[in-house]
Length: 476
Image: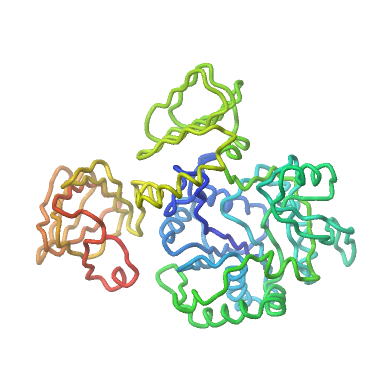
């Protein structure tokens, strides 16, 4: 039984302003119509596998669920991390759930934010790795290096391992951390070094055994957290106090660099971890002038640039080697050779407590989404979308009143002791201190405009009366 384990954590700050802490790059469509997470899911088509198991940050749970729903993808579980603890513990917990179903379960560990252009080559590498994993080897996939990259770790392959029906894999001579440019050039010319992709294939039981040998502290703390797990809607949760006791460590440091069972299988599938805007420019299609564009973009005398428009027309004249990214609340202009320093801008935003590094104006919830359209000192206008048969939490605000206007669909409104229906162009007023909720009883999405007014308009002015929403901090 092959179970894809998709790691969907991470903040992706180097792709700001498109990627935000609460909306990182794995949830973005930056190389096609599908998001990177959705591409990772679709990449499994053609392999014989079970429903994938996903691991994500607790704050991203609704994003993951919604993106799976949009591509009609099933899953075998979505594990929520209250705090990131790196890959070694995350994979250990996934292995615990897998072994519970099948002692011989195989885990194909994938990152949700990688680009692979050649799915057939990816499938072939997985098929090459399967026989090794079945006999108890721990396979890591090494990507054929095509340039002297300083942003990747490297794996030096050793002797060829061809036995027991296995071929195409190599022993691991050593793992190498991200090198400087001179070292990277040497690795490229040597030909024995592969980029460390961070993708793995092994038996769940083998991984747990090796983790217990090399990092018993991680194995023991994961066991304690696992024994206390519980389900919440479609999600798997663990007590935060137990989860935070798990040591923070990568699978490479914890296991792969120490085990004698490591095997590297080369992969030549046009892979990239898309760790910067220049990397994104590399993997996108380009015009005759070397420009990669997306959205409403016009170029004149522009060369070798990446230009992204989310909301407005972006026009460039007489420039080259630039990255220009426009979103609804921020614009980035950077030289393509300096995009690694975008992270410094994100750090400045954090120091100034600015929301532009945290989230976009559109926020996703289990019932739908809301997006800020306009705001001032004492008002805020939001577009609210409620999915069919869904409803917001019953709530109350101490400092703001709200006006709701239905744009399309039908709203079932609870206001104090009243419950009534609103249809297109009808409205209602929610006074300060009045309990309220809105439900979509229909079969089509409900769209309404919400106008907030008052002296304090932030999201933390809320009292929730629904037990689940209150317990887990659900908005609306």
